[in-house]
Length: 496
Image (cartoon, rainbow, N blue to C red; front, top):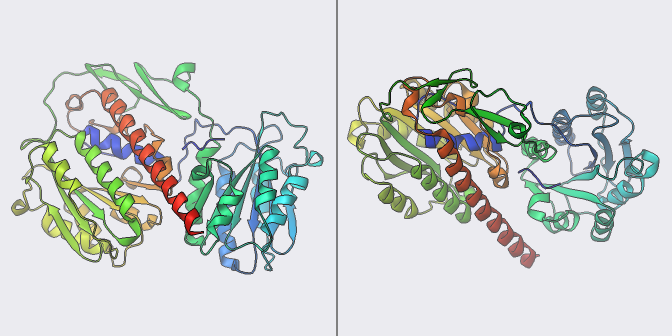
């Protein structure tokens, strides 16, 4: 199983870029209703050794429950079992035990930690010989049904995992390894199936493990072309995405507010003036290689804008322990000059003072003296990868009170409560989160029906053309991110 891996009137290309992030993070508490999960025998192998505190084990149970919530559970669909281990191994419930989602969730809530050693190899061996055995019904199922084990651990095992993991994979069991905190990362690589960049995940603490649930929700989602099968209600153009679709219109028409039907454009007044400022986290946790990728992503957004004195202007602010304006609105008048300035931006590499950065945006970035234009729409994009070290609420509230359209984009250990605090209303359409850069190639279409409808719908040019361009850009970015991940894995192997 290969991992598969909102808004008022703002520039169309920008919204489509942000739209992509919406799907990779799956808009808050939302999973495409049209996504079906493939039949799978799924076994969670969960470390509850002494190092896992009771409150942390509860977080693991929440993670399990969130993944289960996304599955189509049933005797002929997906079945779930749980193996709990420490010094010994305990089968909490086998694959055949629960035929409904409600029953599974109740069983997960009843699981208690064992609180002794860490025999990870023994637990994987148990999964092979018992959890996936014919007596549990796994052998009687169709050979097309996947066998998947998700191993969650936070320490160094007291036994060997390499041989038993190879044995599991030889029997057709796909292994995912999730490490927490001070886990031995070499162990994760020994457990996981290939390609390892899709099967190994690491989080700094149990407090953020729930965010990985989105990755696995997408992993079990069947990719179906609903446009090709005719399972849609678009009047003119259907744009397919994994397990979902969005409607669009032919040239000369615009999408109505119902997101399905089209209306002939009666005028074409052109794009509206927009002042756009990026507020970029340059803290140490971002790391230099990822900071370069963020710069490339900024330039990809710039490529979609109509940059000119009368249309889009771009400013850039970087922050860490302090705030630094890289360039104000209006300093550069062409995409070429803006992109060159972004590429030349140096990495600050210190703390994460998001509150101070937001205050700078409010007090300085959108003033006339900083190049802002009266009457132009003010748009701020805040990009962060961690918890702010200062208070953000007052500045975030002030930005929205002043009418700035604020988008919040979080990656990795970003705190979703902070992203929601920053984002404009409706919050679900203005904040985006992804736990894993590798999922960036999953592009959703949720925002298309909201593009360019508040003032003059005909001002937005060819949504389909923007869609194709943005997909190409994000696919290229994905390949770069995967290459970086592979290089880091090689370096970690050398260190080990």
